[in-house]
Length: 352
Image 1 (tube, rainbow, N blue to C red):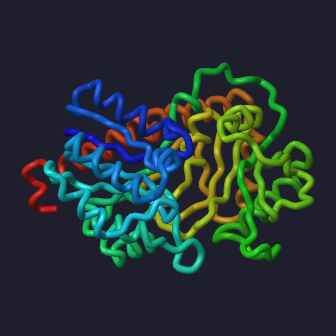
Image 2 (cartoon, rainbow, N blue to C red):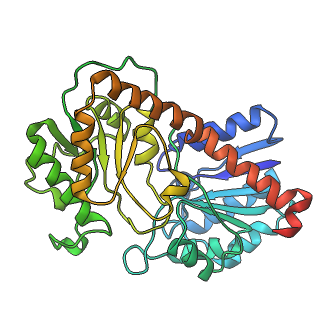
């Protein structure tokens, strides 16, 4: 396959995980040719958006891909159905594949016009959740909806370390808490339970609990240490006996943010909220504790602190091993590529 990757990047190379995965597949001969075209970066370099669209179309035409793989399109780089049809109708007649990891809602963060157009023109789309998210994609015109897990890149996370016998914190949470329309009590879906979880941990653990994140919802919270650089979160997680999260958009079936794979990869037990379907995708993972209420998050935190240091580190090691085998970017994207090959190109693709 000739693979044309269109990553959503602010700076060339931002998408470390998928780039690592696709470069590896190219080196292994799965891709006969590979090219990444950072479309936001190129748009900034050009005079106007039409020039950017023209360059994208011409770059694809010259490369002649079998697959155009686009990630997280949006209205900052508008594309309508007509342009996408031009892209699909170049001489090589490529398949258009969308991978959308972000969550969306009907009222909060609805699908924008560009992603709707890409969904409608895609030959297959991979979403980070199912349930109502898959229904939204289908209503937008997606023909073939599939699910793909979030991943982590092993360049920044899950790097070799010697687990320590003492930690600065008992529990750490990395989570933003924005308020919608600047109304102090109006959060993104899941935000209220995120705040309740943090408050419950602080009441019990005091200054042995730390939260890193921005947003109006954490204003004056004594446990909030402020924002943390994305690349530094692994260090923060490894300086605690556990990481804790309550995800936003917590009603999307099977959805998790990259918080889950990153946290497991860091080699520390992780507590996260249940979402429908987790029993199918995240069942029986050592070191992963799935809870259904803020109070249960605290209960499990106290249970973990009741284990010996040796046992906590053992659970962390097992969590990291699972993440490395199943949630590392080269694995997750490798699986996506295999599904694309089977369902769009192999003989049985006729039955998709």
